[in-house]
Image (cartoon, rainbow, N blue to C red; front, side, top):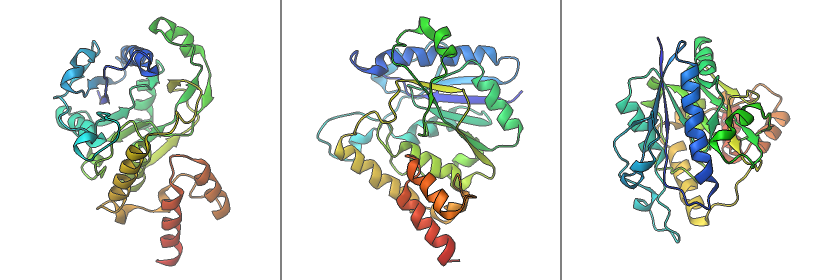
Length: 287
C-alpha cells in the first residue's frame, strides 16, 4: 500500500487569533480523513514544531525533531515573530518519513473526509505533484463539534496556493532559499518549485478537498520588513539552481493566447507577474 506523509506546523496561538480556533479543527479534520482512507492508502500525520510548542502536537501525529531556526536568525525585524523557514519544515518530513508522496499545508487549512483518498487517486493518474486550492468558509465555524456542518458548506473558491503534494524525489532539487511561512511569497515559492521540477503536475482549482475558515482572500498586509525579507528570499530561490528549469511554458494557463494568459496570471496572487514577464521574454526572444 502506498504511503503518504502530511506535515503541518502547530504552535501556541494567541487566543485572540483566528488560528487559536482554526488549529483544533484542522487537526481533527486530518485525523478523520486519515481514518476514512485507511483501507486505500497509508497516511502519516506529522508535526514540525519549536520546543515551546511541544504541547500543541496533536494526538495521533508523529513529531519531527524540534525546529531550531526561525526568520529571526536571518534578519532584524521591528516586531519579533518567530516564523519557521519552510525548508526546515519540509526537510524534516523528507528525512524522518520514508513516504513516497509528501504533503505540506498551512496549519489553518482543514481537509474534507475524502482528502487522502482523492490525493491517492490523483497519484494513480500519474501526477508527480499537484497543488490543491482551498474553499473559503464563513467565520462562524469556530469549534471542532461543527465539523459535520463544515463538510456540508460549499463556500467559495480561493485563488491562492496553500496545499502542496509532491513525490519525495522532487524535494532533493527544491530551492526555498530562507523563505519563512506566515508571510506572502511562501505559496509562490513552493509553487514555482513544482512548476519547474515536476514532470506531470496539476493545479486543482475546483475540488472540494481543503478549506479555510474565513471568506477573505487576503488576510491583511504583512509587516513591511517581513514582506521585504521574504520577497528577497523568493528571488534568491528563483536565481538559484532552479533558474534553468523555470519556464512560463510550465505555468498554469500557458496554453492560452498571450493576452489571456497574462490576464490570468495577473489575477492569480500566487503567480508573480514580474517573473512571468521575464519568463515570457526568455521564451520568445532568447530561444
